[in-house]
Image (cartoon, rainbow, N blue to C red):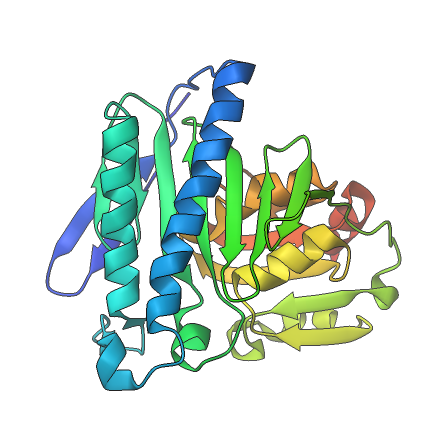
Length: 286
């Protein structure tokens, strides 16, 4: 396989990591079950830290901007969670790699934990609920499991690409199933903001039944629940999308890049509720 990589830049630091496609690492079913349980544990542990800083004043969460050209917020919670998760992963699986938004990439044996301590920091700092902790395990080609946890509502979404579930407040998990809607004019179309869409892309979105703006990882989770039908996001990083891919695919949905390729390294991402709708949406957008 030809390696493809994505360089992640941080202000004043330069290139600090390079995540790339590599030879697939085979994982036995028993190990996958173990890793998924561990990922759920990581997400819940992270959620406890996130709640310590949620809905408190700006000076208490240590809000800073990590971009020179735009507003890209980071908080104490982001940093503390990532450090906490890295320590837990290193303790339990010292040979595994780790790739996180705040501290970059530690290369391991081919299996890499991909973490976003708080996906949706803008919502988090504003006291809104459209944020979550994201944890995935990447086998070199695709994420083989994913977890999204919203600790305030105690909603735990998880999947392995074959089946996906939601557990609320620790109750028995319920199977997730995405929508069977095929007609684009009946869809709920979610995107971050209309400003980043081209004129053509915006005209496509306007042909849906309803456009929803913002929501980060939460709208992808609602797609897995069958409540949203199309999500189109640009400029995503691997840690923004990897945890959500197995959840959506396990519920029956489809996730690709805009050109129909592997979405694991991010970019312009299209997620839809089913294969037939996905084909139609890609055709419309391109």
